[in-house]
Image (cartoon, rainbow, N blue to C red; front, side):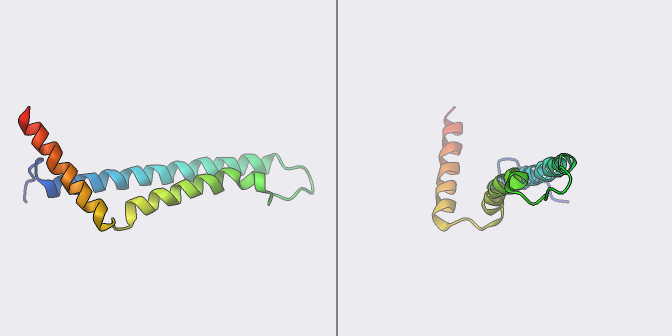
Length: 101
């Protein structure tokens, strides 16, 4: 089994990607749990004959869902070339600063 050097750039990139995935999955889990609780609460508060399908019952799910979708795009879509180049320059710059210390 190969061991990884924590200063290796490929290791750092993989670690950052895993951290992003973990953050997204945590966000997704919180979204699901909170919205399930909200659905049950809203359903229990319905008056007889009232429809559940009203905007206020889906307000949180819709707007938080937009944020979750944005988070997914950031994590799962391949990065634009200029963003990758900027990240690599920034990594090299930070490594150089650490070497100076």
